Image (cartoon, rainbow, N blue to C red; front, side, top):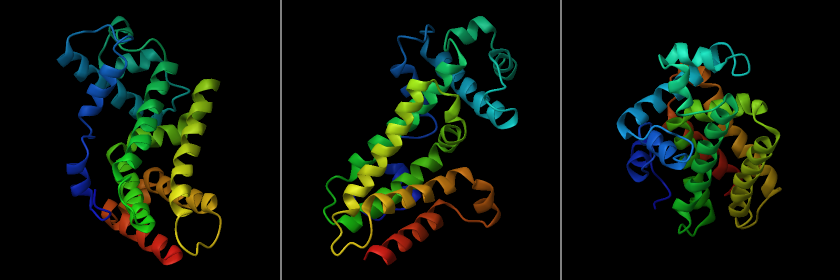
Length: 224
């Protein structure tokens, strides 16, 4: 994979998009989802998760309940139970999607030998994948506290895993100044600002490519 690419090129490189995410969920949770007709199952999963993100933003995930979700999606309670059994399961599935995406992205660039080039590729890919799955990333950042204790631990371990992947690449930069772990933490905080504070960048007419270019220049300016 190349080290330099834009958002459009990234979308062509990865199968991940806002459509096949429903197929991923349906296949991954086939043992829990009792609806077996694929087309309506995919359509209803999209309704359920989009409604979840909408309600979580409007009233908060902690305050919403499954009846609210039924009203938003048009599904009956029995129809909803064909896909999820509880709010906890919803939150778990959302966290799982984000964890899967953030763990898979680094494997795309394992053959990029130069550490600065690989770091650029990781930065760009991380920003772009959070652009594709922005509501999912935003939910995990804002509402991870509603996860069950075991799932909260998994989410924390996942973030530390991604940070360690970045730190391992940074440690390979010649004549490195500073702690790789701390530099990696700063880089991850930059990503979080992008998908959490979208209003700020939208108001300034800054898209994912411009933001990624700036993040890469900042990284190279410090490390090169």
